[in-house]
Amino acid sequence: MGKTCPMATVVLLLCLSVIRAEDPYLFFTWKVTYGTMSPMGVPQQGILINGQFPGPKINCTSNNNIIVNVFNELDEPLLLTWSGIQQRKNSWVDGTIGTMCPIMPGTNFTYKLQVKDQIGTYFYFPTTGLQRAAGGYGPINVHSRDLIPVPFDRPADEFNVFISDWYNKGHKTLKKILDSGRTIARPDGVVINGKHGKVGDKIDPLFTMEAGKTYRYRVCNVGMRTSVNFRFQGHAMTLVEMEGSHTIQNVYDSLDLHVGQCLSVLVTADKEPKDYYLVVSSRFFKQEFSTVAIISYANGSGIPASPKLPPSPPENTEGIAWSINQFRSFRWNLTASAARPNPQGSYHYGQINITRTIKLVNSKSYVDGKLRYTFNGVSHINTDTPLKLAEYFGISKKVFKYDVMGDTPPENVEKVTLAPNVVNATFRNFVEIVFENHEKTIQTYDLDGYSFFAVAIEPGRWSPEKRKNYNLVDAVSRHSIQVYPNSWAAIMTTLDNAGMWNLRSDMWEKAYLGQQLYFSVLSPERSLRDEYNLPENQQLCGLVKGMYMPPPYSGF
Image 1 (cartoon, one colour):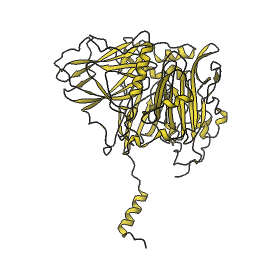
Image 2: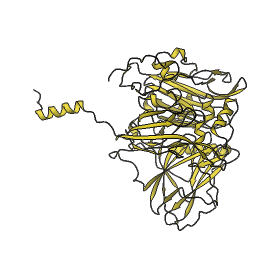
Image 3: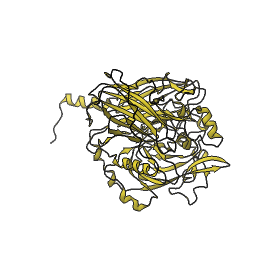
Image 4: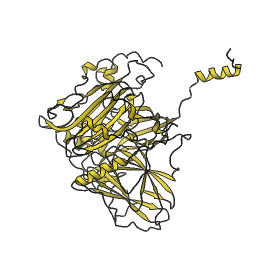
């Protein structure tokens, strides 16, 4: 005969069953405006948030709810995306043109998102037009909960470093160039936190360290097209985190960082107290661009940094091999906990059967004399009605067709189809995506809504036999991947997050001119267990404006 519970216990259990404690909320109000800036000495119109460039920091903890009320005081539409934040069950606020209506000038919109089961270094940026070239970006730092062990000692402080290429032409001019069918070409230089410095210039310190202490530098490449290498004069870096994953803590003198990517390094102030340069240089360009910033010691007595800078890594073919080898040194820390207490390595991705392989070949083409970029011969075009809203309201056939693009490239990828590029994907399938780059320039790709395992990068062409070279044990779980010239890269992920999710080139010219697609991942249950309902404050536009609301998703 079973035991009975005391009455007090029964009451407690009943209370626990009806009371659900919510995770903490953080509230932000942002005013997005124009402001004059001249990082390279040429005044131009930039984009500020609350008067700041880079924008305000979102400093949060795993599972926090983030409420951001964005007032658009520009004279053009605006959307912000939260690069790397997975928006579990909530592609409604992903901030891409395929998921949301833009915030029109003179209006505001409140984003409600959650950093569910994530830690790491991320950033937000505008996805409308070429606004990313003018700023509007800022840091998202997601910390582990207090009860979750972190595999390194708490640093004395944390510093956010934003590296970007910079164009002296304003973002509106750059957009007109692309709309006319031409390329915006190479940038005019590179900047660190919106500033350009030269050796010997009188520069205010970017950050100050105290001797004997260790600091965490969260570094992101928020540029338009340029891979970079960064290094600290006289100081080694210990890599500890990459796009939300704790890594094996290898030590590096310099690190390549590709467009859209973020990572964290620890730097110890263990050298002579004085000034030192943080050095950034472009990668894989014939003409190298570089810039410096000052990292100062608190008791450095004004001793200037040495003009002798640490050397750049090799370029050309040798430089690509160097960079691929560095990528291969990045490993998942299998014993460390991330957002949850269980070790990262408890997820054995290498033992899961692949249910679908998608091979994407990127290409550059011209349509009626105008430049376009494609995946498998399809160049995506944006629609007046966001794809996600068209699908939700049951009018997708009026806006787009599924699967215009095949899972493998056609024989002639130069033949271009201009259409919304929506891939119909199966909820919870484990997919392999292969990127094959036949061009002479490096590519970087980003997937919203998920993290994936970057299992391989190799020169040449991919074939199924290449799977024997995959890292199926400790590849880093991340959301972006670079593909070197005439090379391929392979990633693996489970499509377990229902929604409409953007896979795009992080080279913004290429994304703007079509090198992107959306995965439509629908749960057959139409259940709140798998996807949230359309937010009550969601703006409606295009064909869905004024339509009757569909029935909401059912309960768990």
